[in-house]
Length: 70
Image (cartoon, rainbow, N blue to C red; front, top):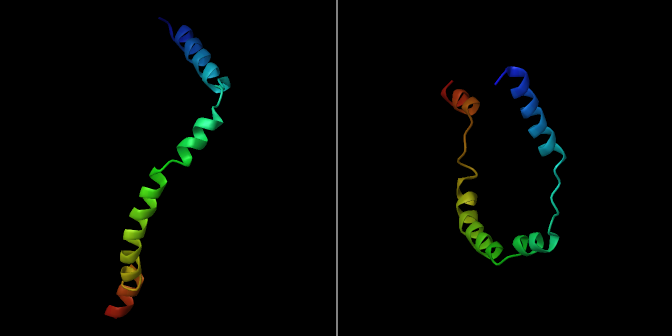
């Protein structure tokens, strides 16, 4: 297959993808976003929050390390 024919096929496919707009099921999207898994993520985040408080003051940047050595 020649380059012109190949390029034309790629252009056709790209155009179809660009203008393709499927029907969106907003009810299904809402159910997914408000599912019970959200509670699981909230619990998991709460576990990690206590670690974040401990490490907040111990973070030292490279610039601060150089200043401390000098």
